[in-house]
Image 1 (tube, rainbow, N blue to C red):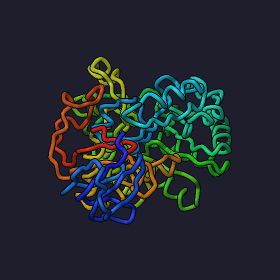
Image 2: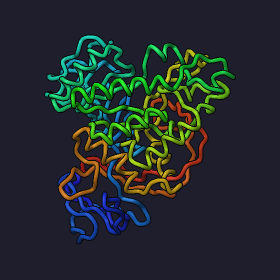
Image 3: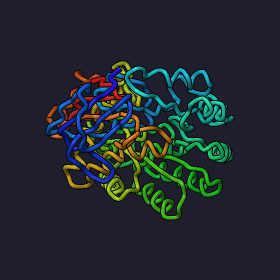
Image 4: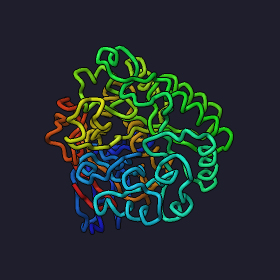
Length: 406
């Protein structure tokens, strides 16, 4: 255990802006930000020319992948209930311990038994023992009565419900968004309205119950408009998105590239641009990695048979820094999307560099060039749709609870 740690000479990312100086950590908590006298007994990290930023909080990961999280600067992971079907107290406790000692894991409780969309799971007991929210998993709850009861119950417990907004009746067995690319490839496709229909239904139920909801990913122009209108009415709604849906359109599937088979599927260029605008104007609250590594046996299949999902943890920050370089958002907004907002929405420690907070932080070389290469990733599997892409920005040090782990 490092009792005193001083990170000096960098540019500190705070909610109010960038300040020159460093961060002093004492007994696992931030003791000073900006200028301070370095104690003689402190272990020091020289951050000259680097950013000092809060550790990333990744909402909605599907696997605990410690090497990928450390490499990507993710110090807290909000785990979806799908892996191991987190629907009992014992499974919540097991999931919470699964990241030690490298990452804090905050499980989401399964909304229904077996994630089948029917009988509600023991949400209250799981919340008592550490679940930070409740989630419908990879699918949408089609039964409106069940969803109404879920929102009402979870809301009464002070939990936010994480929904996968995709009308299963309309989406069916589709593997792509309906459009030119799907037609050319001859793949089963569903209209983008499958997402907007699900969002509209859930927002009506939020209005009826007053309970908070988080859409794990919003990826279409119509869905964004619905969320924007709901926020204007004061409804407790939030939403996220992954870099894949910000930087790739459905044309990335050309050549039957299974690494680009995702859930929700990639959208057309108009939707992609609308998503970037929604990040810039604050409609989208957070950016998540969607980390869901799939092995070769799951991806080296005909496109329609391949598993959806991507490895996204270690490339999350580098890809998102592109939004800053393009002038769409500032660094303060970027780290709010990646750290601050997730902490606020799910009641988690960290998220910002402030005195007294838990010392989860990063040292980042925002200009460091590298290439995303699936065969060299730290992740359990390297199925990234960004394979071969040159990027800038690398995590140099990851510090969890005041202890350097990278």
